[in-house]
Image 1: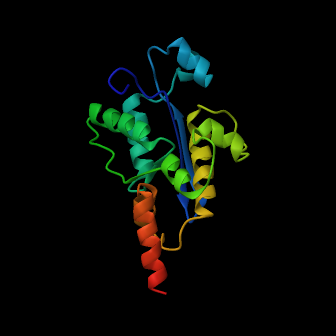
Image 2: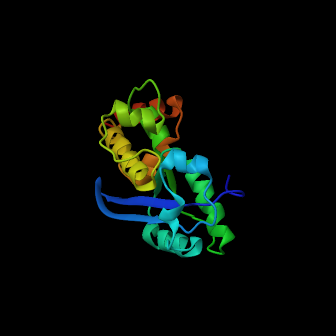
Image 3: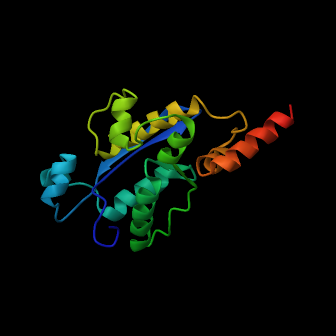
Length: 183
């Protein structure tokens, strides 16, 4: 929970024209790391010694992101967590447009489930460690790439992609019919 917990690791990839052009990865200083978090992530308290402060890590992330679209698997969770962290340290809010790869995947390909762990196996994504920040960012990128394979022709910009990913079946069908009528 953003009010009770803190970011301990940040990982991100910068994508342009469908390819990774930059990456950001850092641990974040933490006074107390619960044991269950170590079990989930494999991050040990020693890993966080000497890491950047929360404010420093968040400033660096904000600089890295610039005005790019914030993309994540279950984006609402990460977005709200980071937004609360930014505000806590006087950095404003994220403000970046956001795109959820779960929503995008559901609209572009069939799968029994859409959790990241399941999709990693389902899509055969080669990854180091699930539940690690950079690895999860890379895997979300791979899910997004898979989704790009079956995007409708009318999705031509990041704004179109964001609208498409959150649209209902009825809205997508209507948009597709409008596109077919203009040919």
